[in-house]
Image 1 (tube, rainbow, N blue to C red):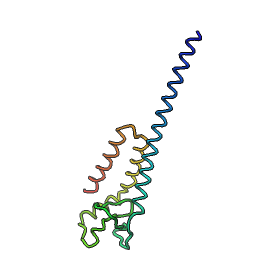
Image 2 (cartoon, rainbow, N blue to C red):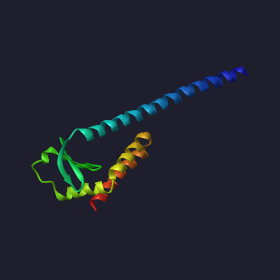
Image 3 (cartoon, rainbow, N blue to C red):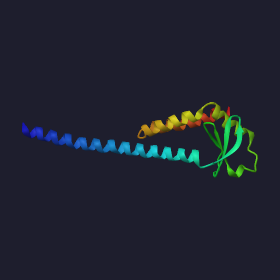
Image 4 (spheres, one colour):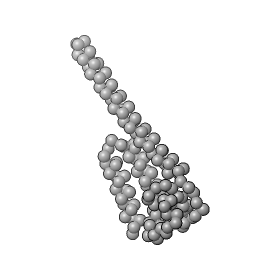
Length: 139
């Protein structure tokens, strides 16, 4: 009888160690993804040049990059557009994203994919939300 108790104790100890390992791994990856989100947000919010321009309630920021995009009430425009005219359709698209509060959906989907990073469906949901936003803004 004591032999069976020892075997079950050994099995429980090994299982516990594996569960602890996978739990720590899960948390480590989630923390790394969260740090990446914070770093990207910090870069997004602080590495640009603010201008005095306001366009339909959106503050315009110039940055060293290639794409025009919006995040909440900020419109980010590459510095290469300082002397060029931005197409009205692009500005209308970004203003629609701002009006429909798509930045909130993007932040929520990003946090959701961090918490459930090991579930591939969470990444597909995030991608489909962003694709859906682009189609909604183009209408």
